[in-house]
Image 1 (cartoon, rainbow, N blue to C red):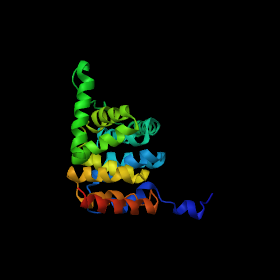
Image 2 (tube, one colour):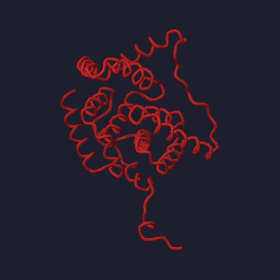
Image 3 (tube, helix red, strand yellow):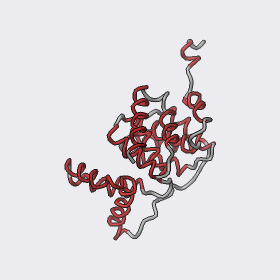
Length: 233
């Protein structure tokens, strides 16, 4: 049975992504991890499968992919992360990859909570710097315990994990917040990425490579925010 015109010409995720992949401005490993994170957020199963195969072909490690999924959990919740892990397991099985996921290097359990709090505070301050107190006070007004969860769980347990560098993690955060259309949180993470060593062109590339996944206005608004972040470091 012949395919309809729309089915015959429909492009796969990789077909659409290829033109961005070869562009300069952002390393290919980071490009692939950005797509993986945003596809996890969006719950795009078939595209995720393609992205996982592509990343593994390009020697992005299974642990780096897992870290991108774990980070996306902070933005998309448990269900999306679990779904992405299930798809990844299927892809690894198809490729005959057997490995043991890396666990975080932590001290004895007796000192675990204090360790995560300390590590989380250090990273939070590194990202927000002179805005740290302002952010802590603002979020603390919403619900005091919530700020503790953010420091200990998000920054201490997830974002401080050693298997992705901070620059890459903040680029992922910028892409995820662009997809979520959350400008008030996007700008501080853009600053955090710049402070972690990202160049403005790298953030611009990370945003623009989402143009076939997100609405045009999401991309445009994120680029405006990037200009603001560059001038308010």
